[in-house]
Image (cartoon, rainbow, N blue to C red; front, side):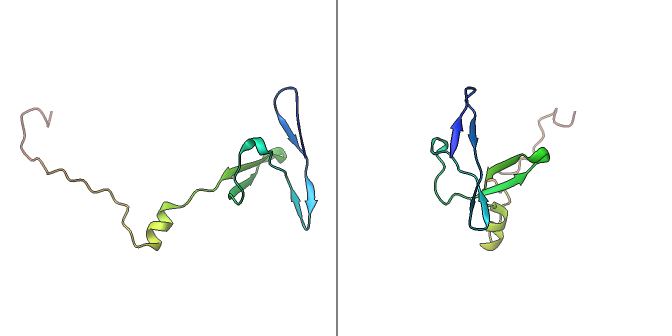
Length: 85
């Protein structure tokens, strides 16, 4: 359950579901079902939910991939005259 205030904020109310306390996400937030979030409890009781993103470094290690940048530029050792100024 949620209520929209005059200032445009949305107030949600916690409810008990099994052994958990649940906060309802309003439909107007367009959050897909089964989307994962990282929950952070801040000072003074604030709660922040951040969408969980994949860890490209862990994926690279799991797939034995190298994330180092490689370019196709040829090394140019020819000096023109002002490079070492």
